[in-house]
Length: 133
Image (cartoon, rainbow, N blue to C red; front, side, top):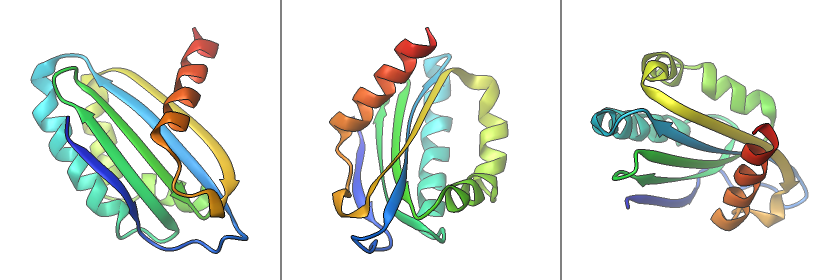
């Protein structure tokens, strides 16, 4: 299972709050995994250059076609600017037809608590999925 560990992109002031986003993305067929994985790496490079990004991590369960993302931002505006910027915006549009499930959860934490653990992120995603079921 490929994992890109938490990478601090821009150190946060411990007194600040961070906006955290976690996602669980599942492709409809394993034939979509190589393309999705490639675009995940392209998006990862973009995050590392994005203003307002504090840090990010990615887990790819290639054999299951499941991808997990975790990132922290200085604001919702910074996160949304990244999502709307290229190449991420085009990647989302191109991959949308290949997806079977997509779940996202957002919360804020004191920046001193970064990085967020994967256990916390997965628990929050599970709660969100259960709430929507």
